[in-house]
Image (cartoon, rainbow, N blue to C red; front, side, top):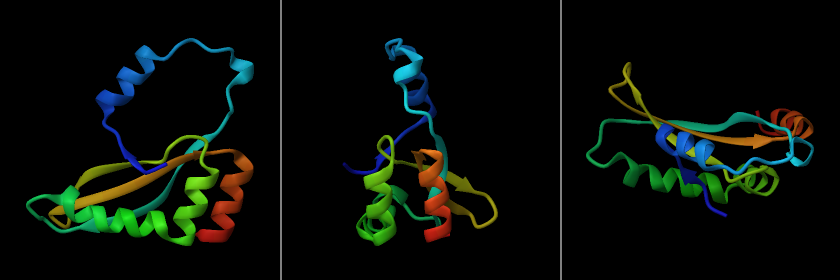
Length: 107
């Protein structure tokens, strides 16, 4: 399982096309930011960010996130107006007990 990128258009499409499920079978959880980094203004930011995303995924923290996340973690690129570059954020959805463990262990 690899970290995937998502856009707001993808999220809307997923919500519209998602089949209706029984609420009792859905695992509850919450999204939290598990990693973030800032990159300067480069020609192809996603290409340069690939190394940092790969390093995170192979780290101890990244391995734990990939194992315990309820669904595939996603990364998003945001414009960083103060530094004239980009801010990358990796978020994942966890159960409440895993969120507590993550915050105590890795933050």
